[in-house]
Image 1 (tube, rainbow, N blue to C red):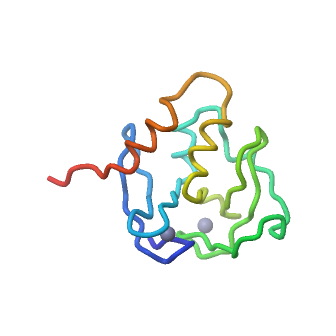
Image 2 (cartoon, rainbow, N blue to C red; image 1 turned 45 degrees about the vertical axis):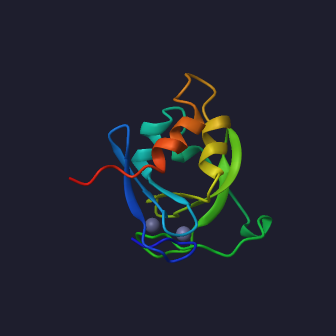
Length: 129
Ligand SMILES: [Zn+2]
Ligand SMILES: [Zn+2]
């Protein structure tokens, strides 16, 4: 898959037994497949995603790396940063730093590993054997 923001190749990185796709060579954005977000933050569900008119954010339109449709811009009901969300439900795109904001504001329940810890792990590619 290619990055929807800068067209670099996304790199699969393992975190807590799931794979997330990160734009390691480019903008450092993160793609989360629909189910992966739930694993990371059980309190966050994509159906709580609130779409907003894309003009509310001054950023270029991004297309889903899976299906190439223009993604909706919005945020989770619990708040947090604006995200790009595939209208077909493939997942979420987070710009660099947005994942950290999401995990910091997202669930409000159990404490996940600290966002900084998460990012540290996230940006350490797994060893290739
Ligand atoms: Zn990128
Ligand atoms: Zn899609």
